[in-house]
Image (tube, rainbow, N blue to C red):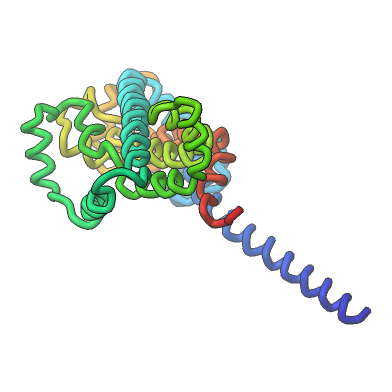
Length: 297
């Protein structure tokens, strides 16, 4: 009986420590995000008095958001470029990834091993920034929105993950479909893909978040401000005060110029909020997808 009490006591201690550690980690993640949101609502005088790390403003000031609203044309244009990139880029990447992964998962594909090795080499070596820029220029993609999509049309790592998942699907299911008269396209769309929803959702989320956060390729390949995505507009505001002029703001809508930190925080909030709102809808697939292959059965 005493052993049982000791066992239960030890288990309770572990649970308490586990909860405390997870709570601490959650706070470490949440507090900086919460601070950025709250900082977007502070005034210049409060920033000067209290510093830049503010959790609860003394008085909510919407000057930074009013200033952003005055430049809504530039923000909406940047948002539309970002949505174009995310939707078209993710769709094309998933099409390429699924097609390539399904082809390499076929055991009767001649030269499959050689093709796989060739693909893996691209993970280790690349042409570099300058050859990539010259290629984009020669293909006529420079200063077009497609230059943000086509050069990185497929992630080798995501393709290999999906290929391994396709290979783990029992071959008996495909053999049954072949007996019923299904061809390769029908096997892919009616057998393989319905069984791969979790993996597809997870990789699609990776692609979408990657496109949403990307800015470096747009900086290299696009010089027209009207074609730049939201992250490049955010970068201009964060790295230089002169970047605020790119928003074409109407200064008559605000009584005082907002502090730089509040302006930066406000732009971070409006550029991050949409992708955060999408995550809860794909969370269940994401959890299943990252667990693929960890448990047999």
